[in-house]
Amino acid sequence: MRWQQLFADLQAQFEQEEVSAERAEAGSRARAEVGGLLLADRVRGAVGAPVALTVRGAGQVVGDLVELGADWLLVSDDLGRDVLVASTAVRAVAGLGRRTAASETPGPVCARLDLRRALRGLARDRATVQLVLDDGSVLVGTVDRVGADYLELAEHAVDAARRAEAVQGVRAVVLSAVAVVRTVSTGI
Image 1 (cartoon, rainbow, N blue to C red):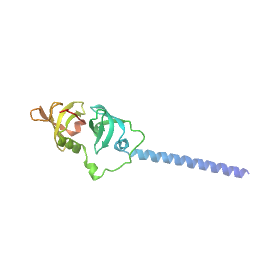
Image 2: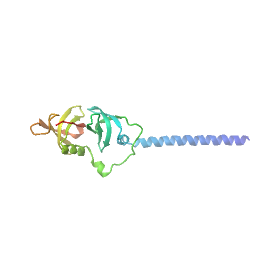
Image 3: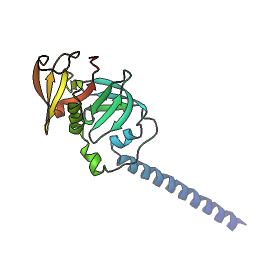
Image 4: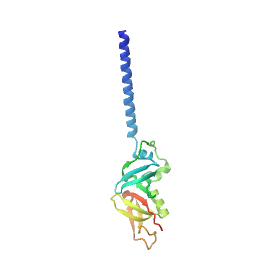
């Protein structure tokens, strides 16, 4: 009888050690998986939900996360404006909840949908925009063209259409300095 109790005790200890080892391994595996995630993967799980971005030079950008690109996030703010945020300017993201998108390598099309392409779309649309740079300065006008590492902004009053007589000057802006691009409703 003593032998049976001894074997039972040894079996219980062995099972307990196995359970502890499995828990430790599962925790270690989970930490390793999280360690491989990029912020973009974590944020992608919040598409369609409200988020608050802390952005270098622009402060808080709050709204519904609409889309993510290769190096940008698109948020629709409470005024219905589209706000394009450069990923490199994002310092913190609140409102993510528990969902995380699976880590993915962007396909050839998504990889090409970078900030330059998004800005070229704004140039094509002749949209009046407000550029917030990473130092906090704000420029208003219309994106005329986008180069490899810069954009040209035709500066004009926010309530004026981009016409030759309204343009106060053209400014080249380094893309790496762009933190936020807000579309502006001119009411014209």
